[in-house]
Length: 190
Image (tube, rainbow, N blue to C red; front, side, top):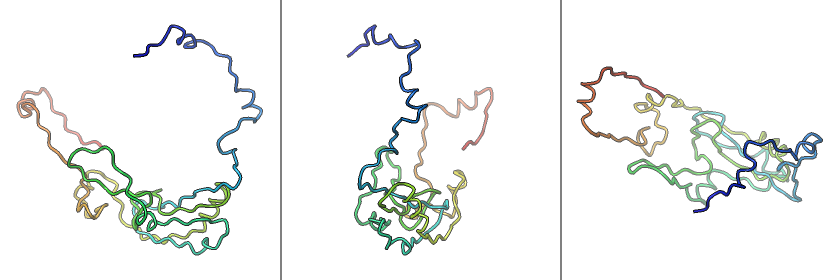
């Protein structure tokens, strides 16, 4: 195992002469957005404006724009990619085949529903994204975790309910612990 030498600690707790202040104050600092490679493209994301809605995306206003190099739909993602893997989940937990773009239904505000690869910067991309028309059919959002367990509005239809994982853990004598407790406080929190 590697240990820190006494010299490794010489800067901790000490005043340091700052080197970057002058260039920051003079506006000479380069940020990632300042780097403009020749012939670069920008990815713009169309995002859901509703907490829950089925949708259809209309690209007719942008498909002939010469700056639009590629239109990526949820159908493209569904047919050409595998779901994003869920790496860690308890045994017995329902796993959702999560895709990079929502397919047919958006389940939260800001969920990506389409993408455009555009010639130009982020401002150009945003201008073009504003011309993409999305026809939404808003649905009742499920916003209360406790109520959602018995809600008729099932978020992921293939599961049949909004319960992703349920288990019961019993260790020791729970009933004896409650019966001998000085006070029992019951509260629901979300």
